[in-house]
Structures are given as structure tokens and as C-alpha cells.
Length: 436
Ligand SMILES: [Zn+2]
Image (cartoon, rainbow, N blue to C red; front, side, top):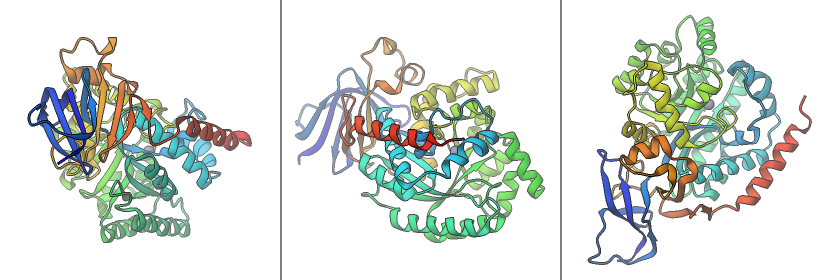
């Protein structure tokens, strides 16, 4: 039987029990991995596409667990501000002016950036996820899209946004050959009322999709929830029945040990977003305890307006370094753990660990190749260390999603890079032209 893609001659990190295959081979057929192991010359594998990958490292694509892709349009417009001021004075007024076309242009720019950085799957929360879905479909990426809901004291608005979210979920869950899945995205405990959050829980259960929510992002938001409801954010969400294994909580910066234990007990997943947390000076989450208590933790960039890139390899390094400083302990989040969190950990956090996140037969073929023929990736004593501490997004030279090659030798095949950049630049300029 003829394969679709044969990759050979490379080091392979399967991300299964820390396995490293020094001269490995991967075979892809019908979007699935059919073989991963030592390179075999006999019997020879016939394939439509043979990738000779000597000097490269193959691994599962990176999973970005929390972002807001249309916000790439706002990259660099609001710098060096605290979260509340950043949101209320800079971001929300601009977001109110965004059209569907702006969102598409921004989403496509982010998809392009992620492909170029080796991200094969991302989890997004924003308005108009139907438009984001179009960008995802065109780019060839995999995504879990959560239509965002911000009620902001207006129940009618909340109800309307929930209705829109339901439409998106119904239409796009399983869309694009299953590459697109959906969740519902209540923005946070302090922007949605208890009534609406309860409704969202029920609707998500009835639709069989998860929930993506911001949680304990800054000291101020934690105080706000306490002032509004007289209890901590986790207790508040628990009282509404909102905790469960299908919930992805972004940030969790200001969680107490007790709250982390509660999340672990309910199986809530967390996206750790170190660069955004540093940039907005939100704080450093207790990731060591999260892992010790058995919480599934993935990593995310957060939106490109608070990062300001979607470079997951940068995030992986920052994630590890920041935790070492948090605990003043260099053994916290060792290299294998860091890379695991950015691949299979992220996949599990998004509820797709059975499909992606490792290189194993029967999993979807989401594979990246990192070109190690660089001074900063030489010598190779520890391949994990080179990827976590030395590699950059620009070292990724091939990206495959669902068995389709999206980038080859750093050339993206699904998108016209120049056109995507030009359109995004033009849209950003127009959006900001009548800014106060
Ligand atoms: Zn966010």
C-alpha cells in the first residue's frame, strides 16, 4: 500500500515516555500516522512524498492552549499597561469597532504566524469564531474555537451572545474533516452573571462541548469577584456547577493551594500563559503545585496583543524559567516536562489527547520538523534541552497537520504570506486611524 508521506533520517521525539529515536522514520496515510520507529529500508516504503530529514528533529506539533487570534491586528497598540487598564481603555474600545473582515484578516495573520512557529493546534476565545473558523479552514491548522461571551451587566446582550455561540458550536464542531472543534467561552466570572454562567453550563452539557474561561488572572480580578459574590473565584464557579473535566481555565495565576486542589478534584484543565502573565505583570501561577496535585496543564501564548507573539517555543522556555524563579528551584519543570506540557499536555487540556499530542500509530498526523543544523542547536547532548532552551520558532522548517504539508522548508503552502501580511497591515491601519 502506498503511503502519503514518508519522513526518514531524522531524530524522532514521540513524546511517549521520553522516547528518542535517533534514526527514525514516520509514515503517514490518510491523515493518520501508520508507523513511527527505527528507519527501515526493507521492505521499502513507497510514498507520494518522501521527506529526507537528516539533521532535523521530528516531534508532535506544538499546542497553543489559550489565545485570541484576531487580536494580532492590535499587536503593539497598547503597551506596558496593567490588565484592567489595558482591557478597558485600550482593547475593548478597539474591539467594539472590529468588523468580520478585520477579524478574518487578524485570524489569518495569526494562523500564518503559528504555522511558521510550529504550532499545529490552538485554542481560541473571541467573538465571531465562525469567521475564525474560515481562517483555520483555509490555513489547514487544527483548532478548538470557543465563541466568547461577555455579558457586562446586560442580560440581553449575554443571552444574545450565548445564542450566537450555540449557532457556532452547532455548525463548526467537527468541521473541516474534524480539524475544528468547539467550546463555549464565557469570558470570566466577573463579566458574566451567575444566571448566565449556569445557563452556559447546561447548554455546553447538552451540546457535548467544553467550556473555556479566564480564571484568577490578576489580583484585581480576584478581588473583584470576592467583592461581587463574597467568595473566591473557584468557590463561586463551583457553586454554579461550572467545574468539571470539560473546563479549560486560562491563567489561574492567583489560585491558592486549596483552590488548586479543588480544580484537581474536578478535573479542570489549566492553560499556563507565562509571557502574557509577565507582560501584564499579572503574577506567576503555582504550576509546580498544579502538577503535583494532578492538574492537566497546557501552555498558551494568550492573545498576540498581550504577548506579543505566538511563538510557542518562546513560551515553553519562559514557562520553565519563570517557574524556577517562582520556587527558586532549578529542578522545577525539567525539559521533558516542559515539552510534554506544550504537546500532549496541551492536547489533553483541550480534550483531544486521544487524537494528537504524541507521534503514535493511529493518531492524526500533526508533525513538525525542527532544523538542528544551526550554531545555537549544536552540539546535541540533550535534544529536549536544545528544543526547550535553545530553539526558536524560526527553526521549525516543516509543518504537517492532519497528514497535509502546510509548510515546507519554511515556505507556507496554504497561505500567500505576503498577501496575508499586507491585508493585516492595511486593516490595522484603518482600525487605528480614528483612534482617540
Ligand atoms: Zn486570554
